[in-house]
Length: 446
Image (cartoon, rainbow, N blue to C red; front, side, top):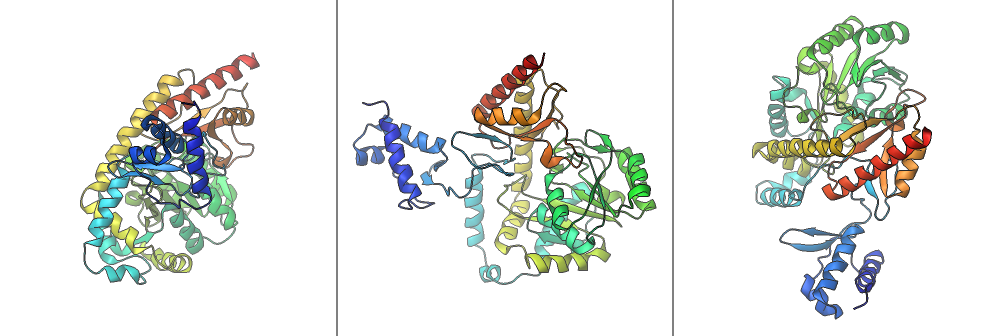
């Protein structure tokens, strides 16, 4: 049997996928049927399917078989990198597990068996249906304290929430204070709104209240953007003392506090939120993308009563409302405990991956949270990030330099590793490649 027979067979199927003969979602025949149809051994058919999976062209679902993937939707690659065969993506955090598809299938089945389905095909209230806002508000109260559902708006993800704040509450030119290294999404929103971002010094993602005070006097800040509980990309959890200090500055200078809690569920014992410390000036951004799935674009804003109308107007101008089916799914998963289960699974998975990082990258200083699916790796003065990123890509590993997250110019010499959802064998191989390249870079500089 020729060695490349399974490759040729995989190429044949790949061609059928590329030309549309096998469109996305097509169920492929079982391994034995596939082997019989093509006159090959079962082992050859199995290897062909594995090769197609490796290329990202098909996906297996436990108990259901093999299906053609939508190749227009990359499995994980994000930011500004293009997909490439065999490239292990550590750029875009895609938390998830093998049970996610079954979770979605069960949720949709239960939704389809419910009543009043017609309502989901109609325009929804801009801020979301009140009973679902109540469910999300109640879910948030464990971390935030009492939440009035009338002050909660359902959004199409956390990024949409950031855009609504910029559109509804901030005029172009209003300056926002941020960590020097911060979430890339705030930079995107600020660029569109021509809103300057002002870096406020601190330590590893924890802003210094004194530095914020000085910048208020110097720059006339109007708002401050914070990820106080599991900061992205540094993983920091801000102490209550620092939070209280920042609140004092915000009140003194009448700053709007934008609190982003995208990864807050990863911390099991967080200090009080800014929403509870300064509810009169805090816009709290929540999201289910990192706990349930990045394709599920459902988030929420909790705002002071005086801001709700302007945010609702911005919501109406952008998406009109969040799709009812997605909101209903999230609400049902909150009620049946699925969200809580997924959050715990993400924490356990993140902890295991952090442990793997520490075991492989033993000579590197990792800046991270113990349960997060990402880590920050500062480089020594003898290392340069751009050549490192290029060499790693040549070796089949995609990582992000600091530039997308940096508010300062020039950006620091560092890389961010995002490993949520990456198969563990692939992650181990990628980390070993990174370790070797970092060691080689260090030796070359000596």
